[in-house]
Image 1: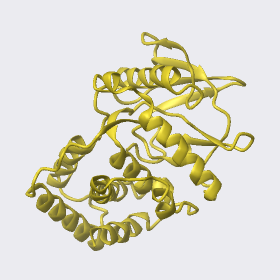
Image 2: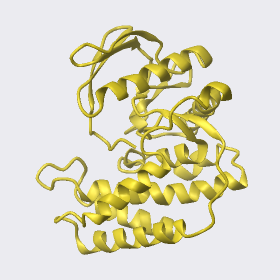
Image 3: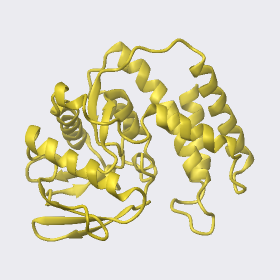
Length: 275
């Protein structure tokens, strides 16, 4: 769940080719995940994502070259019914693209449920950021109390695995007006996941509500979820909303990445989800 505008790479875009250079974090792992995703999707869902062209793990910085996907990002645009339908169709294809015998050998994506919970516990143990206001501090405590109570419950049945892109930023979904299709880009955090978690990743990503124009309820209605997935989706949305509150309240007030008051708006979102 890469935070909005926290770029870990640089992009060079040409007419039909894109070069991506990894410059922050565990760059080799990011490159490996991206290349694996491009290769798998090119084999099992060609046209949905960029086609892999070349990879240079020894370059400084490490580099992947891929084809250019047509279209404009959904982020910052009104995502109408036509675009929502195309997004749901693209995601259904993406989640089911990798055959099960291959998917079980794909590592779990970063910040999936267990890893995310562990990170939140570590952050909570360090205390709230100095700039966090009273409402934010109280909401963080409420969120962690919910997490503690959830973890004391019975262990849920393991969800059906899918291939997940690992980033809910609407900027990674490109609308092609000519074909009425959505292409998907940015797979550096991809891996094995489950459908409910990935849908929660999109609905709770700050890009889906900070700019307006994305109807999460209408989006989720595009999917035929099982009873188990609906229950899990609610829990995953709560978890990811809590994670975003940690992210947003830790922003440097002198160099904010989001409009003033975004963390306070996230407090309201989290409390609404916690019910």
